[in-house]
Image 1: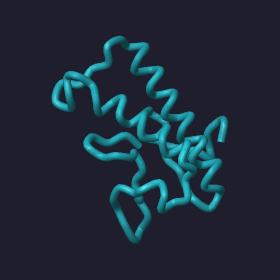
Image 2: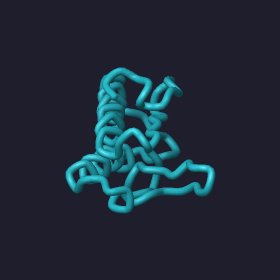
Image 3: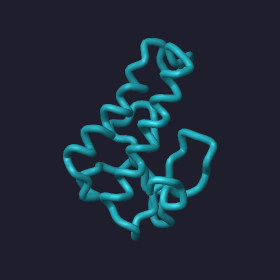
Image 4: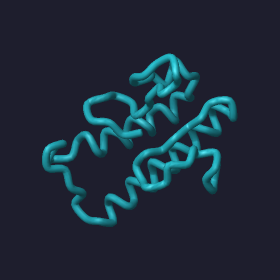
Length: 102
């Protein structure tokens, strides 16, 4: 989900396209769009930038990762079962629908 220098951490990985997606185009609620952007900005705004990025503490990284997965669950719940949501900030490559909480 996360990506440097984009406004929202949403990507179209369908066979017919690839690139960032505006949440409004998907019908994502304004509240969830705001939360997605805040989560992405938390990483983007790190003082040491993309070249030397590190979390201030290991727990800060774990917490950020968990919030991202929670957002992926929320996104899947809003978009419905016909849209596959994947979360790439951990080592679990399964679609969100196959994980706990979806």
